[in-house]
Amino acid sequence: MTTIQKILFWSATILLGFVNPLISVGLVVVYYLPKIISDFTQPCEEVREDSGIKSYSDDVLEDMK
Image (cartoon, rainbow, N blue to C red):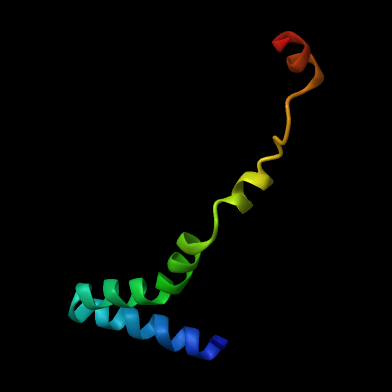
């Protein structure tokens, strides 16, 4: 979406919100729905790799022996 399209979309959403708030809620859900769906469909492995914990430290390994 270009900047002009975004301005028109949010202006229409606000104006329709005065007519019927459920319409504006529906438009906001439709606007964010593709991002929500893509976040749910991403594999969880990517999140686990970013956590930074890949193995035990040397101290913990010695204590476990």
